[in-house]
Image (cartoon, rainbow, N blue to C red; front, side, top):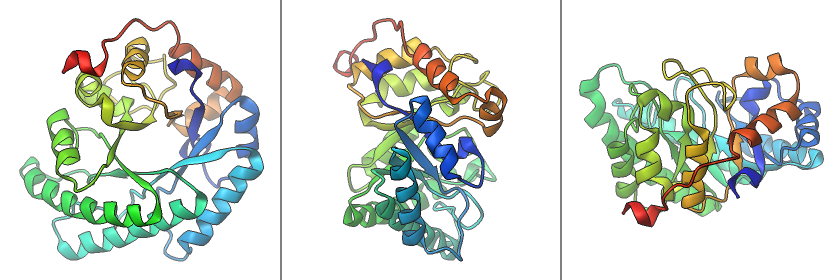
Length: 281
């Protein structure tokens, strides 16, 4: 049953800096794991040492580190049309893989690009991204870490089903998909992703919105049909955690992690039947 899967929360949702007390509160509220949000690269921090610290803090709190979100700041665009900048970004992603290995994470979630300046850049940026992902997959495999690409809104590479499917097919290895429900709702592609790529989903970013802005609301607050999402994931035998990526303001406003956990469970209950992947073939 999908609504009984372990609950997870991105550390992005807890704000910064990450405190052990925040992790302990997560565990007490019923969460089982975290995604460590390494959203800003720190050149003065040794990745493996940071990973060991994150892993130890999570273990002390009784949590697993399920995934690491790769950096999104300047200098981390693996689809850059500037080859020097692309190589620099790949090196930073390799350091992220080192961090993930050290903290015991199963997956590293990667954006296929930064926002494109012009739509005309998409073809070239997609090819650059593919070059980077092929190299990163090899490095990830050497470390025993999985690589998952995330669906994103329209200014990014991997913003529509056809492009995501092409990327997954062309990458030289078994790379998974991180389904970001909020991003899919913004592009109007949630149904298509669930119908076409559900079997590729290895991890989740669960959050809601109104279909207009990337709000990162609690599931059930916006326009996403969560019964449909639950049924689709059930149909393709998804067995990872229900990993939430909520805006820090949402968590701060509720001030009750247990209520957040209960709300996520409620959004995934009472689902309607959904055809299996084989039925949609």
